[in-house]
Amino acid sequence: MLKRLEIHNYAIIESLELDLTKGLSIVTGETGAGKSILLGALGLIMGKRADTKVLYEADKKCVVEAVFDVSDYNIQSIFEAEGIDYEQETIIRRLISPNGKSRAFINDEPTTLSVLKAITDNLVDLHQQFDALDLHSVSFQTKTIDALAGVIDKVGDYQADYVEYAKSKRTLASVEEKHRNANQEMDFLNFQMKEFNDAELMDGEQEEKEKTLDKLTNAEDIQRVGNMILHQLDEDDSSTVDTLQTLLNELSSVMDADEKLAELYERLTNIQEEMRDIAKEAGHIAEITEYDENKIEELNARLSLIYRLQKKHNVDNLEDLLKIQDDISTQLSGFGDITQDIESLQKRIAKLEASLVKKAEVISKSRKKTAPEFEKSIHKMLIPLSMENAYIKVDIAPLDKPGPSGMDQITFLFAPNKGSDFKSLKDIASGGEISRLTLCIKSLVADAMTLPTLIFDEIDTGVSGEVASRMGEILAGLADKHQVISITHSPQIAAKADRHFFVHKNDREDRTVTAIKELDKEGRITEIAKMLSGNPPSVAAIENAKELMK
Image (cartoon, rainbow, N blue to C red; front, side):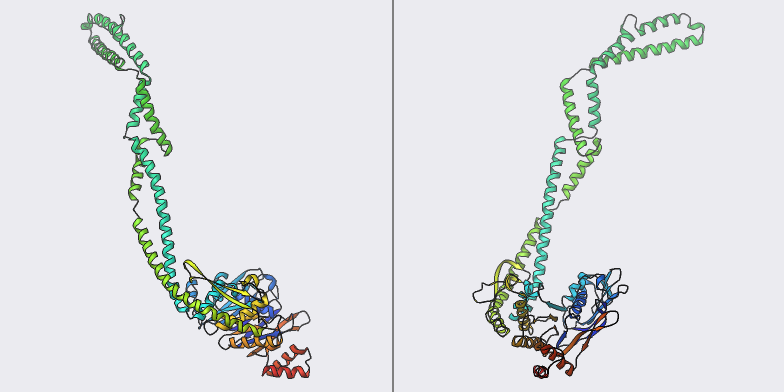
C-alpha cells in the first residue's frame, strides 16, 4: 500500500506531500492543474527515465519519495534476489540533479532503474488510457484465470518443479554442446595423431638423414678429392711419400753427426707414416662413396615430410615436434566419456516432464472449468457499463511441452459488438473498452488475487451518468480490500470516494504552482456540484451532489 508520496521541485510542483490510506481515494481538479503531473512523479518512483526538463527550479535537484507498506505482498524474495534489505515499510526515492544525473534508492540503498522497476511492479498497478496495459499481457490473463480457478498454489508447486526442469534442460544442452565440441576436437586431434603415427618419427633421425643426404649429393666430389689425395700423397711417381723417402735417405747419412738432425729424421719418418695413413683413408672414402639417386629421393621425401610437419606445428626441430606428438597423445587420453552424464540427464528430464504433465493436466482441467463462468461474469458486469453486446472469450490452446505456467496457452479474445468476430484484445478493443474490461476483471479477481495499489487515470473517459455511477460502484467494491486511487472527471465516481483530494493551481507573481488538499464533507459537496454544473455551482447541483454522496 502506498502510504505517503512527497514531491519536491518537479514540473510545476514546488513542494507537495500526500498521505494515503486504504480504500478509494479520488483525485479531481481543473484541467491543467497538475493531476497527470502526480502520475509523472510516481512514474519516477516506478523506474521511468527523466531529464532536467522536469525541474521546477533548474538549479535545484528534484526529489520524489514514496513510502510503501509491503507487509501483505509476500515479496521478500525479490528484495533478497536483488540484494536489497527488506523492510515492511519500504522507502523509495528518486533524485534528479540539475546536471541531468539520476539516482535511485530503496531503503536508503543505491539501486538501478531495472531493480527499481522489478520491485515497484509488485507495488503499483498504474492504469492509464491507451497504455500497453496488463490486460494485454499473457501472464496477467493466465494469472486471472488461475486465481478464479483457485489453482494459484498448484501453479506455484508446478512452477517450482518447472524451474528444476528448465535448469536440467539447460544443463543437458550445455553438456551436449560440450560433447559435440569434444568430439570435434577429438576428431581433429586424432587426425593429427594419425599423421604423427604414419610418420613414425624417431629421435635424432633428422640430423642423421640431413648428413647422409649431404654426403650422397656430394658423392662425385668426395670421390674426386679422395682419389686426388691418395695419388698425390702416395701413388703418383712424384708423390709426397716418395719425396719424403728421398729426404729421409739423404738425412740418414748425416744424422749421426748432429742430434738435431736425428730429431728431424724421426719427425719426417712420423710425417711419412701419417701421409700414408691419410692417403689410405682418403682412398677408402673415395672407394666406398657412391652416388645413389634412389637413396637421395628416399631421403628427400622423408625430410620433406619432417619439414612439412614442423611448418604445420610452427616448430623448427624434430625434438619440439616429438613433444607436440606427446602432448596430443596426452590430450586424447584426457577426454572422458560424458555419454553417461547425458543419459542420466535425459532420464531426469523425462521423469520431471512426466510429473509436470500430470500436474499441468490437473491445472488445465480447472482452468477449462473456470473459463465459461469467467466469460459469463464479465459479460454481466459489462452490461451496466453500456457494453451489453460485448463478450470476452478465454481461448485455452494446448502446448506440446510443459511451459512456465503449465501446458496451456491462455489468450483473452474480445468481440465488442453484435456480429463481431472474436479477436485478440490488443487488436480490437478501444482504449475505453480496455478501461472498462480492466476494471471488471480486476474487480472480479480482487478476492482471489493479491493486487498492488491500483491507480486509474481517467478510466471514466467517454462515459457519464448511470455508466459512470456503475464504474464508481465497481471501484468502491475494489477498494473494500485493496488500495485504489482514481483520477477522474466524473462526479458520479468522485461521490464514491473514501477520501477526496483536490488538485489546484496557485498563481504567484512570478509563476504558477500546483497544490493539493484533502476535502472535507462540505468541500466534497461543493467540488462535486462544480463538476455537475460549473463554478459557482447551482443550488440544484449542490442538492444533486448531496444525493450522489448518499
